[in-house]
Image (tube, rainbow, N blue to C red):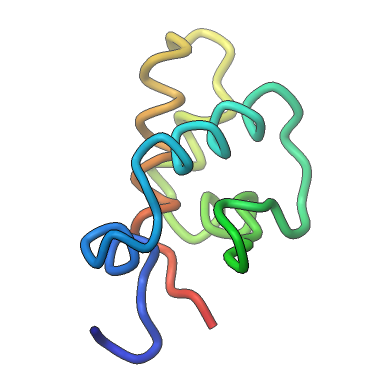
Amino acid sequence: MPIPPTLADLCNADLVTREQVDAAVATFLSEPRPGPHPIADGVTLDIAAAVEEHPWAHMVAYDADVSRTSRHLAVRTAVLLAILG
């Protein structure tokens, strides 16, 4: 596993599940706020910062005219690409 790993690396190593990622994304979308969000035991991520790092995800995540599914997928992509550490 790369050091530092991305959240996708933890998913690929079966240390974080898809369900855990999706739950964290759903929670974030219901109340988007900066700061650490729990993903799994011992794994937290500032989802707002991860979204900010990806212009496309940032544009889609906060656009009320975009479907909830598209916003979820955009945030999920940013979260999976986030480098942990």
